[in-house]
Length: 269
Length: 84
Image 1 (tube, rainbow over the protein chains, first blue to last red):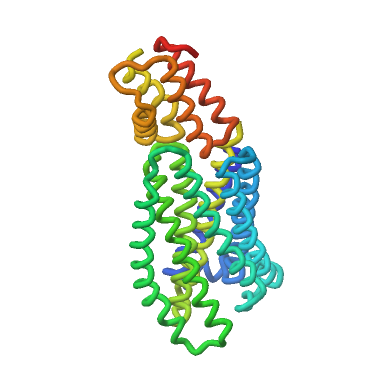
Image 2 (image 1 turned 90 degrees about the horizontal axis):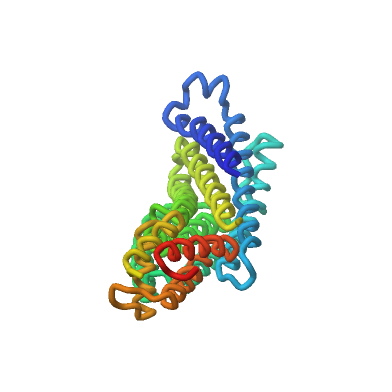
């Protein structure tokens, strides 16, 4: 398991190292001759499928490793189901990017997978909060968590109004416009329980629980950042940012894979 | 048994999982909930404390791994004069 962990981390860093400089040095010889647009698109597609697939499998294996009746079992299962929706969506995109060698259409059936995954992920995160509060460990009271959720909601409504303005104002087809709004909106919704989970798990720093949750939370924050920035900048025509956005999604899935592997290792006796 | 010595021993066992801050906070919180006051802790009180800590840990690492950690905690308490 540790070897798989290490190999996936090294592979992930290599993919990120290939993607990120492209945003700043698009005309560098390496991007003209070796890491062409097609190569990078295929590389990104494979990396996303591998890491997201690993995260999905290990979330389900973790759920199964928890005994029946353990409240964390349901939470990990829901996380696995939500990630499966994303994996199906990503799989559809990868078919275009890797097999056909061309950018995937948007909107497409892939969006059904992603959109179906979000509510399940939301349910997963609230289940984690409920489970961890029921542990009896001093992870904060329901009142503290509620106040944090309210503060986050107010902040995200303000940020969302700015971030979604270009998507709402753009003259795009109705479905595309709806998706450009729905993705960031779901991301903001997901960030609310994630902030509470950050508040809970930061108290575990120094331990394995923190290592797992730091990676998982960073993964989802990276994914949300990718979605929100995509919605904001794509409508403004900032195409040069695409490698960065791609890298954010790859990074997100790497971190999710690392977290679920570590959690599975922690549960397995 | 000295309560502080027992708590220190439990923190050593729990810290790799919960982190030292949470391990110590959990032990102290459960002592308060179980009304374990003063500088001494009896064997039944230590057993009750171990039960609470392991049921909390269970949510994070599952029953099987928790059983191993519970055994470690019992050994650590026994080494300080408590029953295992």
